[in-house]
Image 1 (cartoon, rainbow, N blue to C red):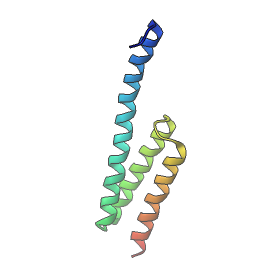
Image 2: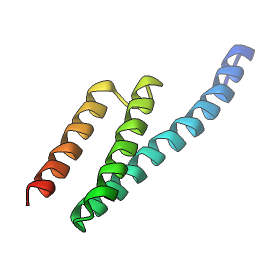
Image 3: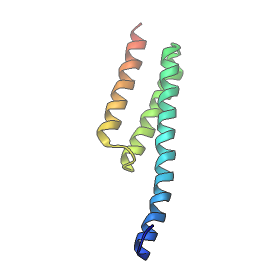
Length: 89
């Protein structure tokens, strides 16, 4: 239990921020998964659009400090690597 009024307020704001961050993180993960499934099913144009959308959501999450910038960069890099490999075949 928080002891002071400021600690109480901080606890409330923590809960709000955690909810918001969870939604942003979850949305980014969903978009990445969707892009990977499209890449695996060899749907080139749709996969490219999905990858663009996933990269955009990763950038937004990193900008808001929900995920670390290097984590976003790593995930974007791996996603593009998969897309480029599927386009070569």
